[in-house]
Length: 72
Image (tube, rainbow, N blue to C red; front, side, top):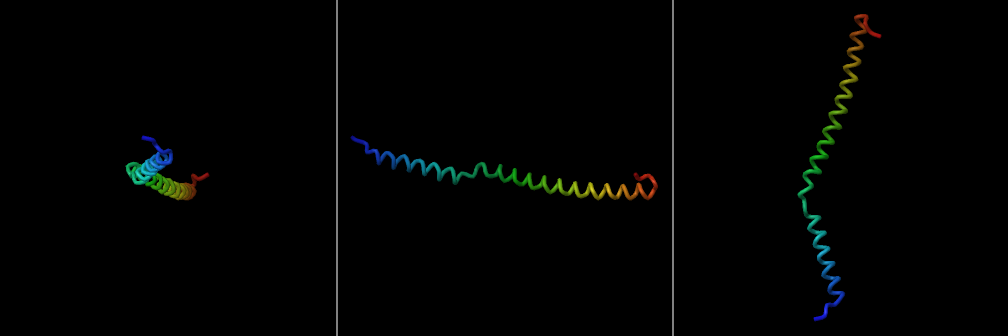
């Protein structure tokens, strides 16, 4: 039985495309990526909130210190 090289390439290409389809449909790692993106977003919100509140608190403490005569 002789194997035609074009049949071999067609079979190899079909297996390759099937592997690509299976990889594309596989969603097992997507949840880890989604959790990572959520954590990064939450971290950005926390950092911006703390920075904003920190500046406001610093200004309030400086106002109080200046009003009681201990400000610089």
